[in-house]
Image: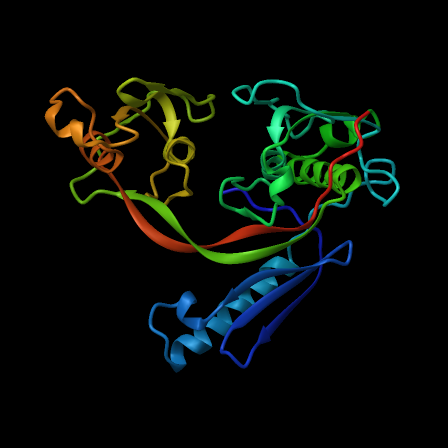
Length: 324
C-alpha cells in the first residue's frame, strides 16, 4: 500500500487517562499529525494487562520506525523553502468540462510536471498524499466538494534533481511538491491521523489456488486489464501480481483491498463478477456471481473483512484558488 510522504522531525507517544495511546508526529514545517489514536485492545484483540503492554510496545516500535523515516529534503530552488513551491509555472482554473470527464496524467514520479484535468479537490488531494480520496479524506467543506479543477504545473529546476533520484525518493518528493502547490494556491492546512478502518483483505482460499503462474520473465511489465460490461466486471491478466489485482479490485469495489495472500510472482487468470447484485440475478443462470463467490471459484482466493490503521487526511482549511 502507498504511504503518505511526510518529512519527520519529532515523534512522541502519549498515554491518556482514557487508556488511549497516541502517536504524534511533527513534520519539518512544524505541523503536528496524530498518526495513531487507539486503545491497546485495537492493537491486540484481547484487552488485558498483557495487551496493554503490547499496545505500548507497538507504538514505541512505530515511533522508532517513523522517526527513522528519512525522505530526502527538496534542494533549494526545487521546493526546498517557503518561498518556492517546487513548480515554477502553475496554472489552476476551475473546470468547464462535463463531470463525466476526468484525467490525471501518468505523472511519472521522476517527471517535474504535474497535470490534472477536471478533478474534484478530493481527487487532487488523493494524488498529493497517495491515499484513497473516497474515504481517507475528511473535512472538505461542502461549498468546494463538487467543484472541479484543471491544474498544470511545471518545474525546469526540479527536472534534473528528480531524474537522478531512485523511484521511491522521487515519488515522495513529487508528493511534497504537489502538497506545496495545494498549500500555496488553495491555502491548504491539514493534519494526518491514523484511524482504525475496515478493509477487505485478499487471502488464499482453503480450497487452493486456481490461478496459473505466468510464463513471462520476472522483470517484464505487467500485462492485464479490467473493464466494466453490462454483466459486471471483467479482469484478464497474462502477467499480473496479486498485489496489482488487489489494486484493481479496490477501484471497482470502492474500498481498501489489502493483499495478504503471500503469493509472489505474476499469474495468468480471468476473473468475472457482478458488480451490483439485484433480486433478478437469481433468475438469470448466465449472470456472473458476486465478487466473493467469483474470487473463490475462479481464482482460489477469498475476501475477508478486517480492521487496519490507515492514514486519514483531516482538512482544517482550504479555499478557492485565484485563477490564472
